[in-house]
Length: 313
Image (tube, rainbow, N blue to C red; front, side, top):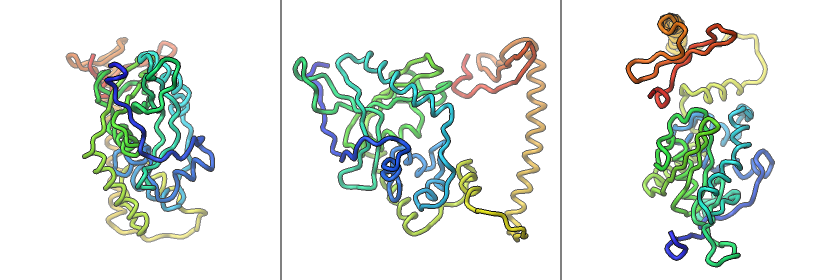
């Protein structure tokens, strides 16, 4: 597309600043009655890392588990610049620059910190473009689960929520996604702004913030983030007995019994598959991969399942 054909935009959101993750200014910009792009998926119950319950506690100023810098998070941060540079190399003339933190011009509680702002080709040689073309999000994934073919808009739903929130906050229409799978498989995606999806997210966020203001706690669900949030609430230990409802006690005891049965059956099923595999590596049914065997010091170390996206041979 030529420069004259390209449409560029000036973001309509308000730029708060370039805030360093983990600093007091960063925490302040994300605290209280705000919803950020990384939180919106939790608001609608689609985040794999955060539940509506855990986010409600965070926004209510209650105790939540401390942030944990996992290897996946660390290497995602370390590789961001390299993957963004690869995207620039694939799109000559486009510049992906740090975006900083933004808030919606009318809805002060709507915040977003995109990975990059994409600046289009300059109008004249040796000039710097002064308008934003689109956004760039950089992601890494060990196996690519939930990601479609390169060139599509098939991305995990929680990332789609994040991107729609970013576009809505800044008033832009397009976000590019650069993905690195397994350290070597580079892919690109494009997500366009969807006004209907954005409104669904805004309405959900508005209701969620009302629940925070009115101290309406979300129900306890099965997310690990919810359990970890409940676990850190009490301080100390009182040597007392606490009477609990019979139905809640029964639910816990039945779940424990069911887990024991399932664990025994899984161990037996793994043994049967390993017996079939022998010295092979993979268990397959037709063209579908079921599980793979890993070996350490010449002996079987483990049998692991293929995910739905990795199961195709």
